[in-house]
Length: 374
Image (cartoon, rainbow, N blue to C red; front, top):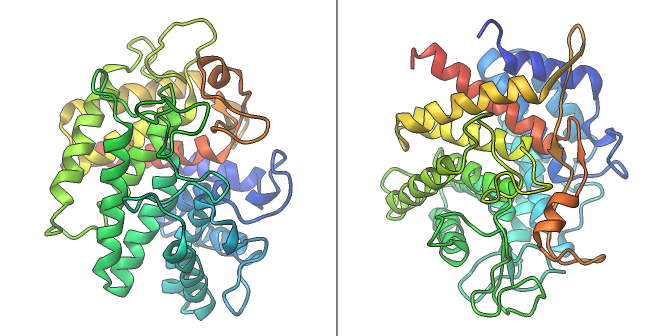
């Protein structure tokens, strides 16, 4: 590795997109989880480099929305939408670095949503108010790391228990015992057309959904106390899911497929965001000792594959990341049925933070492994 790709790609993103919420594909300037993805990635680049430019970018992009009283422009608590929590993750950094109370108040506002958020019968957060009794893998990433950090900040162990329950419940209801992979979504009511009438699960293993989930686990473990009674179980869940992920890695490219267990099927493709998330989670899991050397080897193989197939240089200092699935969900209007055809029919786009950000974080993990001589 001749250069630190984490810095190269972070700088390229900032140069091209001074305001992430003004990226061309965003319908309007608003508080959203995509903003949160890239801001979290840049927080990690800042932590390694101490370059104030990254902190300034995080502050400027959050200050578009955070008001002096802690209210958040364009955010509505009453939507009860877990996606809206993700951009709040970098507010802990801003509160620590600036001491400005508005950031603490904004964190409290987001946690207030989760205090009253609708839940399944076993306490799992609904994905959104408009998707009743549904849990999606995506949602664990949106909420659990922030709640775990909040628990650390406030020394309130209740939130550690809540986060552990969310991770464990999601795996129990969505896991396929044959492959070890997790289905994208679960409907406790089994009313949705996409839901299996027996299990309540959606029909396919969407790569990015599982990527969100494993990134959630490895980030939560940064805050979950070593002596928490559910910590070992969560690491065990992570380990067996990582083994299932490694099994379906494409051996030629090192990447992962949009629909994970359908390698080579017509229309399926090697998808960048899921691949980046797996590289990040596997490499970080190996660095932290949760996973073995095979996880780091798989991450390295994936990293090399993404550099070859997904990173495109436009000009000096300007790079793009291609082959990122634009979006995928379940239900809604028009209705998304979770079928194979649905997942392969959503368009791809370049530089979407849902892929770009995890790849920057993956670069950091690969670079950390190299620096440690692993």
